[in-house]
Image (cartoon, rainbow, N blue to C red; front, side, top):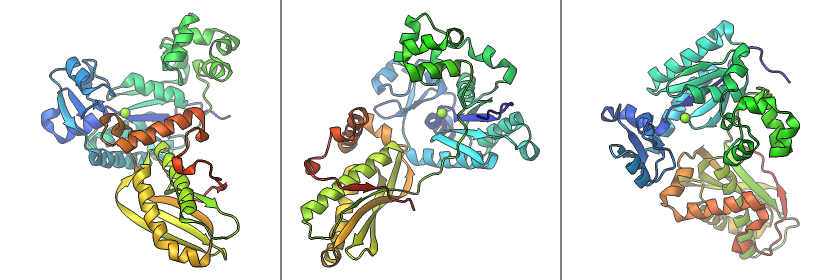
Length: 399
Ligand SMILES: [Mg+2]
């Protein structure tokens, strides 16, 4: 495993992203506590955070915490546009960019010394480019490992730059609370506290076997490694999918009832939309792929008015495309049915749509996804699929 001897991993993270965009676009909001809603706090400016306002808080609780706050309605188009502009700067800065979310990425700047300067100079330039060209504050952590770069940016917020030099790593890391360790949430923190471990340094000083006893094998090993800043993960440029699809081979061509085909379609759409939501993407175009009895293929597509990752509108579109293709299918037979959604964009609103309670279907989708994530795919099945043979699943090649 190769780990750079010098700090070359940048973790760049926009500060209070949505709230900063609002302050950028409305000078009257600058310097004031701003809460982006409605219904729930989707983002709070640092002025509001100072009063204890946190994302995810209900609007009433946020108002109690900070009565002077200005509430503004989220403008997702503006955030998507700002995110694109910032990622364009990331891509100019380094060929190795790993997007983590709409406002956050790892960049590896190894080997760019002669072109762009030292890692520290690159980090400074990145911050000033984002400030000048997009008008937003961004914090950068710079370290040898991804884990430490992320810890560094968290410590440097807001609008900061923190470089952790290799000979100061443990000095920086060890006084931090155990929650700074990647993967340590409330439950693990409580277990560590019960074992008398409250700082990263204390975790580093006990034997790995003790951590395994307290937290289980995988977590214990990981905590041991991270507390010594051993993190072999490389920055991986993430290839963005251009479509998400699934298909279902039907075996020998024979006559199939519309109900039978509809059940296959429901299963496909269900699987595809679940993957879309997991990847936080939504799409506008539904593509139906068919393979006929003679093994020739055809595609039919329809584009919706707005991008979505919800099962119901995508299913409705898929059904209408299938209905239009039925005369052809009836004469030529069918051996494979596939669905893909293309024209993908980042679904910045998806997790936000839920607390707003705006779209009942999104809540149902999320509940189904959640149950499946916890208990397995077979735990819930849509009514129409009960007792049906799900056939052979073939992964669809991406376009
Ligand atoms: Mg951020």
